Length: 423
Image (cartoon, rainbow, N blue to C red; front, side):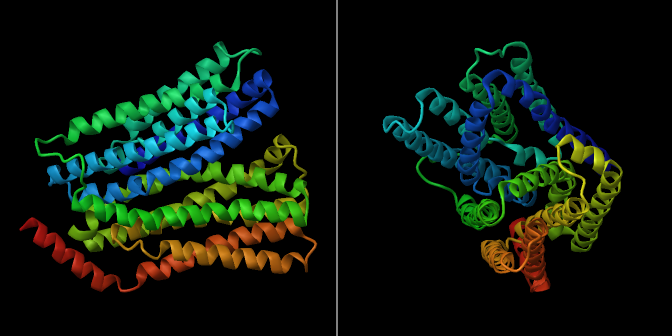
């Protein structure tokens, strides 16, 4: 019951976070104009890649690490300090790159300052600790309250004379606050008296850093798939189809965000059970996958009732082809969530080395399939939806096969390691 309660609270919080841009964006566009808002969108999209690289998979790997090493507080604290050090180094690197963009007149100095703050604040988030310690509700409440500052600025301060840099700052400051709160809280909870070497990294951190490469390379490859398909669609078909696809993606992203707490809450529990109680681990993992299927089914039933209103809101025709295409594309919601679940399980099993290869394989096969069939069909919208489904299903199938390969032997090894650690 506690798990269900936490998942419910987090889903409400996710829904609130999704409503903030829906409410604020029309006001922002009215005050600074659609063109300036487009500039903001491009800046944040580029910055998101910087954040993704800087995150380096730590927010996933550290959850499992904390669960397995919870009693070894000194080890966890040293890893936390090392993560801070590498993030400081990366932040300095980003700041230097952005400074050079300013010097070569590629970026405005004021935007450069604000976007640097936004990237650094995003990189230093400590959501991993709250997830591992079952305190995500606390973290989410703090995050929600801080984001009210953005709404306050948009509705009570912003006017027609406002500039895009001020809106960007209203996005960056709440993230800085959450980052400061998170790091201070984690430092206070993990602090132990021990020798800290500022110029070297501990062995546990080096292992996590190596494992992080598999996760980050996989995400970089996967994130290249969407712009590649959009570019091909715009050239082979029309921008109108790209627009319809964009609406589908916004709906899909929103549903994934609302259902993600199922994975976020269960993941740390699985990490704690994998070594200590493998049979319970398998049972809960099966429950997790079943819950994702059930939640996705409920979404389809609900959307079937409101589909005409949704398409009308986005000014999209309710033609049969468009409706059928959306339901085909919606399969990616379930596969996306299940991919997350299996990748988390691979992190727990410390088997992430092949994830990037799996992502690359699914992306290449899907793009080739799309390009091959694009010359033989006039129904571009359905083909695009099927391409996204093929990429996600193929990725899920390969991850599933990789997850089940040699699992018993690996569990024996990990169990032995756990016994040796206790000794």
